[in-house]
Length: 70
View (cartoon, rainbow, N blue to C red):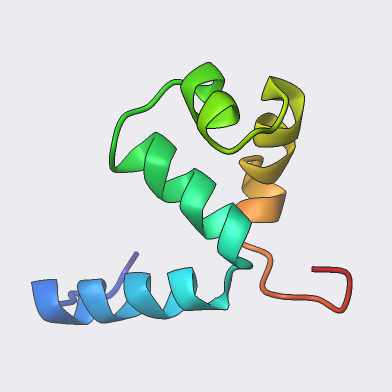
């Protein structure tokens, strides 16, 4: 980011981005990034395959907001 944002501004942007994600993708992203869970643990907890978790967590999907398919 080239802007000099304050911590509250950064948090507000992060929250807005998280709210735009489909629920499952948001939960996967938070589990991996914030809870530091391995893909296999996230997959087991959410009753998904590791491949499905990987697909939800790819950069292209993480930053893609809700769509009609979600």
